[in-house]
Structures are given as structure tokens and as C-alpha cells.
Amino acid sequence: MGKITVQSFRKLFLIIAFTNVGLVSAQEQYQIQSAIDSTSIEIGSVINYAIQVQDNKDKLVVFPDDKSFSPLEVIKSFKIDTLDEGGKYRLLKQYALTQFDTGHYTIPKQRVIIGDKTLFTDSLQVEVRDVILDSLKLAPIKGIMPVEDLSETDWSKIIYWIIGVLLVAGLVAFLLWKYGKQKEIPESELPAYDRAKLALNRVDGNTLLAENKFKEFYSQLTDAAKSYLDEGIAENALESTTDELIENIEQLAKSGRLGLKKDKIAQFASMLQTADFAKFAAINPSLEAAKADKAFITSFIDEVENTKPELSEEEKLQNEAYRKEQEVKRKREKNSVIALVASSIVLWGVVLLFTFKDVQFGMIKDIIYSRSTNGWLKKDWFVSSYGVPSISISSPDVLERRQVKISQEQQQLILGNQMYTFGGIPERFFAQLNTISFRQQIDVSTEQIFETMPQLLAQFSPENITKNEEDVIAASSEKGKKFYGQLEVTQPETKIKVKLNYSTLIFTEDGGAQVFLILYEMNDSAAKKVADRMLDSVKFNSGS
Image (cartoon, rainbow, N blue to C red; front, side, top):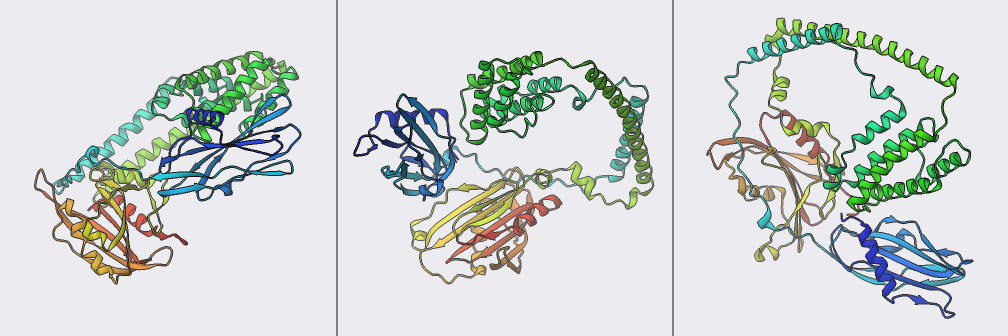
């Protein structure tokens, strides 16, 4: 999705200021103007829409709600900006709109109520274009790497090496605990000011900003500042909104509990507002402004620390007693944990030494010959919808849409073929979803669709395809077929044949065909779990 930038809103302001598209009431008392920053966008990009109203101070103005922009979707409705022009107010209301289907759309007339009068903006035309992929810039598909022959691996030697390493590690841990130097105080037990400074030092502004990760950059800055303020300065700072936190700080300054000046508090409020836009609306400032915000937060925390009242003698004694108590507790916990870990390592090593002949080596093989699929099982998955009819699938990452060329002969039967893929040859895991729409009702079976699989996998030169099939029911109760088995592909460079597992779900819903294919390497237990989880998640969305 396209990002909402400060520059785009500035451009929108200029359109409103210099384009006379407004409506004026008969008495010339109220004036409304509306504008968009672009009439043509790519699918999923942002259209910035603004309404400007000029009215008397004593009149209530009601702007349109989010539902009135259909068929476009409102992804962000911004607060109203107010400019006092003596006897009148100039109000600016901004919306961020988008659309996820291509076509020509009309933004309806929007109703604005000023006092007891109702005015309407003009309707606006918008074109939403598809994203065109340049096939010349795509990296060529490489051949599948051959599976290394591990049949002669001496696993007993590997087990002995693992046991030896574990025993040595346990001995080293014991010696470090017994004779090592005193460990530094954990960061969680440092004063709030020291922890805030450490957190700010860890904010890698150059890398995050170079990668356009403004959201992460400002999240780390505000978390460091709010965590510091939350401890003994501004109560509930972490849970407070920007307005609530600034109001709290202003009260502390007025009561003398903080020696901050008004301009410093105003600058802190401006930085928090910039952070909110970057985190929640993807409105990013310039690189120079972002770097300046980090320097300001550092100086702001320093100034708060220097201006807050000193602790009383009683509070100082309480803090010293707490520090000593924590130090004793930390030493006691360290002794218990290290002793438990060392004894567990030695015990595990002895058990493996006498029972290694009966150990199943599958888990160890997965560790030694780890694949990216192991990491996929541990991360948070995405649930996204694809194609027409809309199908939702849970996957380690969002499937990418691919352009599909349809020949003139195929166009006589096929209305559209939307394709989405995940993974690839380097990961040795490949998933592909096709949602095919026919121009007219065609009586086609799942078996006939499966027979086209060699053409679908032509890039892999499949051979010796075995086939098993069974009836399946999607999570949303649609009936289909599952075809699964093994096939061989030839590695182009080495001419070595590699065996792969495949699973294919085929449905014929809504006058079309839906094919979800997964290929994964044999003997990769993690890949099988990923494939099964993705296949089990297939669901047709109602009303699609």
C-alpha cells in the first residue's frame, strides 16, 4: 500500500488553495472546497482527500463520516485543523483513501453541515491501475539444488562430539560461576534515566531511516521517553495518549515538580505528534527532521533528569536498601540457576552416552541440516485473502501476485487467471494459488484440471509423477479433491534428478477453478508441517 507522506498533503493544500472547486452559499457566508492529490493511482496506493470549510466562529460544522466514501475505503481520518482568521474559522478535514481492485471509481458528493445549512462537495473521478511487473527485471529461476547423500554419515561420531561439547560447556560454565568476575548489574535494575539512555543509544537511526523504517524508529524513541517518564515522573505515561501525557507534564511544570519551560514542552508535544503520524498513518518527516527528533529526545530526558526535585533522605535510604536486597537476590538466583544447568548438562550427557544407539536422529538432522522452513514454523503467520472468488490462506508470509499472460485462444474460454506465489527454489519450498474464472458455464472436473499439472510445472521438467487422491472439504465447507504424491525434477546444471513431494487442492466453485499447489523437498519434516498447515487453512470467504 502506498504511504501517506507530508509532501502529498502539502501538494493537496496547494490544490485546495489555488483550485476553485468549492461551493458557496447564497449569502456568501460559508465556503467549502474539496480536492484530491491524484486522479490515478496503482492498486492499494493512497489518495489524499481534503475538505476545507470557512465559516463563522459560532457555527457547528459536521464533516462526512468514513462510510460516505464508498466504493473507496477510508484508511485514516485525520483530526480537523483549525485556523483562526479573526471573525471566521478556516477548518481543514483530511482523509486517506484507497482501493484494492482496479477500475474507474467515483468519490460521491460529500455532505457538510454548517449550522442549520447543508452543503455538498463535487463528486470526483478516480482511476485505480494494476501494478505492472517488468518481467525483464525479474531474476531468472534457478534449478533445484540436489539433495546431498547422507547415507554414509557416521552418526555415532556426531553424537559423541555433541556429548563432548555439552560436557565441556557445562564445565566452563561452572568455572566461570566459581571464579569469574562479578557480573554487571542487569539493565532491568538500573535507574530509569540510565535505562532510557541505553535504549536511545540502541536506536540505529542511520540504518532504520535508510531502510525507510520510520515507524520502528519513532516507536523506539517514544518507548524510551515514555518508559523514563512513567517511573516516578509522569504517572501512567506508557498508557497515556499524546494529549494526556502533555497535559500531565504541563501540570507538573506548573506545580514546580518539573523545571521545564513551555517551549520545551511544546517541542516535545510536536515530536510526539510527528511520531504518531509515522506510526499510525505512515506520514513520514524528512530524514533531517527524524535525526533532529532523536537528538531532541536525548536532550529532553537530560533536562527532565536535571530539573526534577531531589530525593529526600528517606527515599535515598529506601533506594539503597532496595539495591542491596536486589543484589543478594540476584546472587542467590545465579547460584541456583547455574547449578541446575550444570547438573542437567552432565546428566543429559551421561544418559546419551549409554543410550545413543536407541536415539532417533531426526531432530539432530533437522538442526544440522536446518532449512528456512524451521524458522517459518516459529514465526507469526499471516492470514490474507486472494483472487475471485476470495480465498483466505494462512502462510509464513503474504503470497505475491504474479502476472499471467492469457493467449487469444484461451481468452475465448477464460475470463481471468489470477496467480499468487510464495517461496521459491532457494528455499526449496514453493506454493502457488491460481483462481481461474470462465466466460461461461463449463462442465470441468477436478481430474481434468489435475491433468494440466505437467504444463503448470513445465519450468521444473517433472517426470515420474505418482498420484494419490482423496476427497477434501475446505474450512468453509466447500468440497474438492486433494492430489498428492512424488515427482522427479532434473537439476539443469548438474543433470541430477531430485525427488519432491507435492500436494494440490482443486475446487470448482463459482463457475471457475481454484488450484492450490505446494512443492517441498523430501525428508524435510519441517516443510511437510508448513505445507499441511497452509493446506488446512484454505477457506472460501463468504460473499466473495
